Image (tube, rainbow, N blue to C red; front, side, top):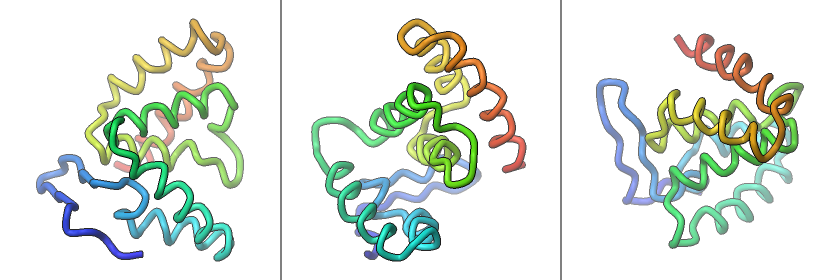
Length: 130
């Protein structure tokens, strides 16, 4: 799938905003395909359709995926989607502070122990990008 004309790229380290955070992100699609080409194609088509629904903005959808990772404890291990979801949220304009506040919010609804490890993993992800 190729990027649409709606991709808005910003300079100087700011967010890369996409109209569709799955269908417009070629690096994400390449990463999914590297796991398994059929898996990558399936994820791109299905998730791309969900991310294309119009009522919830891309940043909110990205933060929701992180919240689901907290509940599912998907922040560590081979093939973990957590790092990709953090990067996706930040590409859509989410800040570290917003993600950390999301973890605090998730303490109440998912449990303190589930959210606790996410802070360390977030640090690892963001420190590896520097």
